[in-house]
Amino acid sequence: MDKKQVVQQFGKNAKDFGATGVQVGFLTLRIKELTEHLRKNPKDLSTQRGLKQKVEDRKKLIKYLKRSNLELFHKVVEAFSIRH
Image (cartoon, rainbow, N blue to C red; front, top):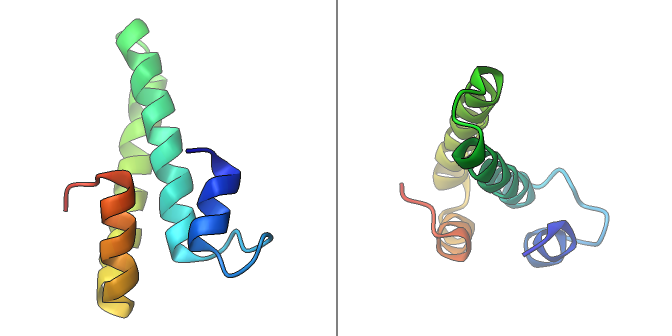
């Protein structure tokens, strides 16, 4: 899945980058990229710190999504296979 597909699936229109579902999707894609980078470069401490921050940001957004829109929450968690 790429960014365009995330926006089409979870945004209201093609330019809706601010929707919570879209933000969770973007963070998930970035987390996957950073995880792959760290598998190749395990001593990259700045990337480890960035990865932890992104995971925390995503966790906060998922918590908000669960409170505000339970249906979308289930859809996002299922689409990206996120443990909650």
